[in-house]
Image (cartoon, rainbow, N blue to C red):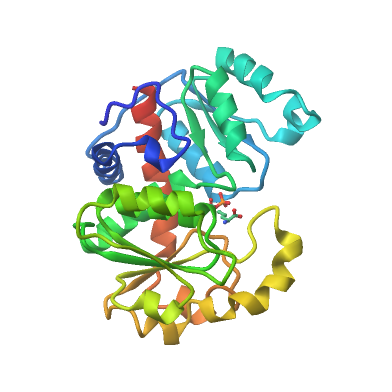
Amino acid sequence: MPSLRGRDLLSLSDLSADELAGLLEFAADLKAGRSNPLFPNKVLGLLFRKASTRTRVSFSVAMYQLGGQVLDLHAGVTQVGRGEPTSDTARVLDRYLDVVAIRTFDQSEIEEFADYASIPVINALTDLEHPCQILADLLTIQEEFGDLQGLTLTYLGDGNNVAHSLLLGCAMVGMNVHIASPDGYAPDPTIAAKAEALMPQGGKVLITQDPEAAVQGAQVLYTDVWASMGQEDLADQRLPLFQDYQVNDALLSQASPDAIVLHCLPAHRGEEITHEVIEGTASRVWDQAENRMHAQKALLASVLG
Ligand code: CP
Ligand code: NVA
């Protein structure tokens, strides 16, 4: 088990490359039943301001399987939704909980929470990053191809939270990462630069507007919704801008012949991915969703020590 006792995971780059590799190995051990750590009486809080199926349920089941308990603290059922300051909430929940996973809009909110709480704070999705998703994604890719180093992942679509964490995670494991987005939707240049800096010599970060160039040689095609949570009112105006970035059979046929397709889910069939591709032989989305649970169980056990 990697020793991450007491640590936060606000960004994937809070881990070293060795710690990330260790977490993936530990997650594989947990999935295979080779390890069975127990944390009785430990309590995980889920403080969410956005909807969630996978993250909420996979964190809950992982914690139950570790012998712990879970408290669902959606903003609407706590004083958080009525504007109690983050600094106050953090200092109070710190006295009750052993670990907290937070899903919100601004990265600064989880950073502030972590400043005021001594328990491990886990980013369960912000507008900037989705690190827990990428732990599961890398586990899924590792199951398919073995060694991650030197593989190429191409992400098509909005260069926001999932793309940002993919940039960091792929760079940390030595995977080439290509991001193809419409004009105005490229990833944050600061995160792209951080990925460049993390990438071992010989690896490549490509940020482009050309989807066909981006998929050449890729072993993994990845997409996400074109309008994220909180941006629903922009969905219609984005549709025409994103059409060329749809993961469909034509684009898949230009990737490596053994390419697999991932999607963090929920998916909008007919928009960012076709029905044929998500239900087709290259799709690994159900294994990917399952792996959220194994990866987060590894993370919880590691931060609880
Ligand atoms: N992929 C993901 O985070 O799904 P949920 O929004 O359902 O948690
Ligand atoms: N980019 C999406 C990911 C959902 C898991 C969103 O933020 O809504």
